[in-house]
Length: 80
Image 1 (cartoon, rainbow, N blue to C red):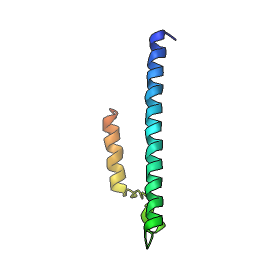
Image 2 (cartoon, rainbow, N blue to C red; image 1 turned 120 degrees about the vertical axis):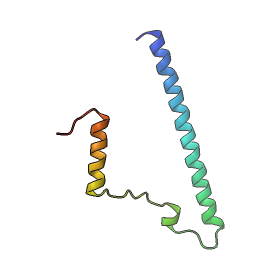
Image 3 (tube, rainbow, N blue to C red; image 1 turned 45 degrees about the vertical axis):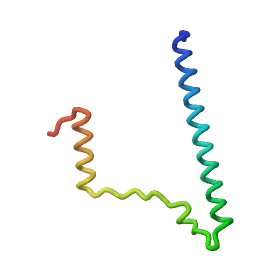
Image 4 (cartoon, rainbow, N blue to C red; image 1 turned 30 degrees about the vertical axis):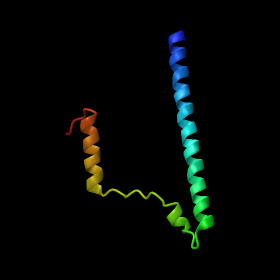
């Protein structure tokens, strides 16, 4: 490994550490906001309201086929 490659890897690792630190701080802030809401609310919000689930919609057959055709065209495939 050359010194330039090592420097690039160290910079990438430092950026990754900064992103992880920011995510950790964001999680702590969100937890504090949730705790504050639970403590001071007369009627605390329900679990489902506090933590909504991201539900992905199932694709229909036509939507799936259109997605496959788009990916095929993107990667240079041909239809026969």
